[in-house]
Length: 134
Image (cartoon, rainbow, N blue to C red):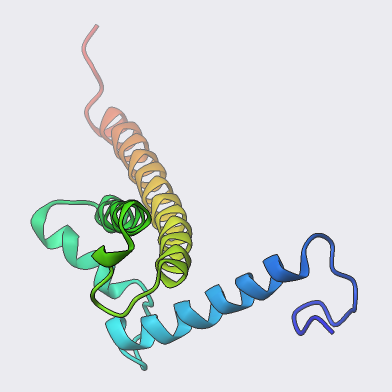
């Protein structure tokens, strides 16, 4: 039974769905470890890059690229794995980073749209208060 849909219907691979469950649990566990159990922002650790002028989605993308590089290095030479994180675990992390980048990128786009809307409203208000000379 799929705990999320409440059905026995698996559209697609059962293994794929099992990996999604693993991904979900890994995200929750790592969010607690990196952002803090009681932190309402599960991406707080990714937002640290903003202190240095790097949008959070770009910081997460850089971390994702580190995972890709790790996967390539381990696949080229398995003896490169020396920290106890298997290639399979790294692939889960890489998948998680892809989704985190997606979420943070969407937040960034929404923030930029809202900023442009505020600028537009401000410009309209300024035009009313200080009409342009023609």
